[in-house]
Image (cartoon, rainbow, N blue to C red; front, side, top):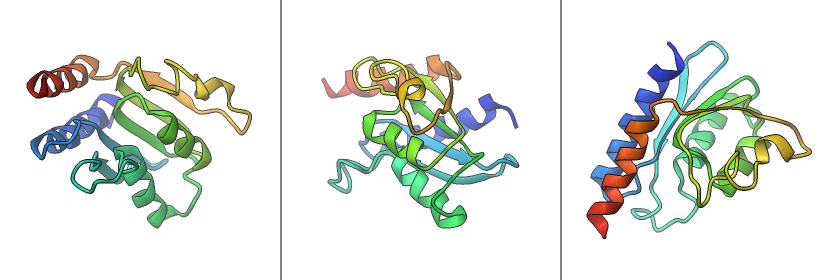
Length: 147
């Protein structure tokens, strides 16, 4: 599979989140061999848990299978990770992050804090813009309907 194929899986997760009233963010983690080992979508509203972001839920699921270090794994997500999720990505040693839409307010891998390039504990490769229009549209439509 290619990056766009994995990103389509994240879009599916994001749509599931939107269907239950969650911010439409979806995440998938693939191991070095390309196998999907975890997937999740936001559950912050449903579970009343500010930490139930798609990335954290997927990382926890992947760690149950591979252990604490997710070295060699690629994390795919519809929206650029926030500072909390970026920290978890870096600490779990994920190799690559692929995301669809930039988060100009809270994005921490590139947009604001630029943790991908400035964290002293290691680096993560970041690829952006995959399925970006679809990811951006999901978010815009979701928030337009709420306002």
